[in-house]
Amino acid sequence: MAQSACLYEVSFAFLVRRLGPDARAAIVRITLIGGFAGTLAFPAGALLSDAFGWRGAVSIAALVMIFVLVPVPGWAVFRLRRDAPVGTVESEAADRIAVSNALRRPAFWALGAALAAISLDHWLLVQFMVPILTDQGHSVGFAVTIAALIGPAQVAGRLVLLTIEKTLSTGRAMLIALAGLFIATGLLMFAGVTPWLAVIFGIMHGGAIGSMTILRPVVIQAALGPAGYGAIAGFIQIGPLLAGAAAPILGATLLAGPGIGGVFAFSLTLSGAAFVLIRGLRIHG
Image (cartoon, rainbow, N blue to C red; front, side, top):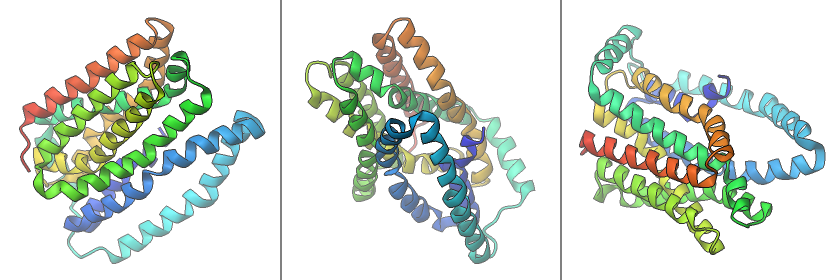
């Protein structure tokens, strides 16, 4: 629960409420920088665990959060509240009305299900990257490298999206990213044949997830309208956050049962279902 309060969705909602139409540029900057989190976290976690054990690694991470990740966002929130343009913050009553209207629309539930499937697919593969690749005959070091590659690939995907966004509608860009997610899993299935397939997987999967991080708030607005975005986005992200939390349990269950073949089949099903749901929304914005 605490970790869920620290993810992208909270900052997206805050920025939209405080910055209004200027929020998209701020979201892009945050996601570009945040894309390097995995690049630092996976190697750092491996090094700290080797040096101090997992408890020591977690303790060091907690100290960084207390002394860096609490005061810096606190200062940023203070500045944004102070400098926000007058009239950009919607009232709570307007938020309640917008959420109530959204909950009665099939598009809300279809989009929520698609985003939950994407979240579950992503975290399922990322969190079990090491056992998947080692089962295919690769070393732990190689598996950690592939996991760390996903972060920079997310940044690259966002930069590519920003370069071509004027030539693609939001809906088409989202479908292309979902197709990339599906193909990436297909490549990972055969990564035991050659390491390069795992590398291409990391690039494609990271690029797809990275571009969808930017597309997600735009898709929500395009499908459900701009009114009450913060409140609606908060509600619609409940499913994806719960899906991400369920990923470790589901992944462990699949690995203990059908094995990595079951993980791959489930992953392909998730990305395929998300593609069908997003295509059914016919988003053109």
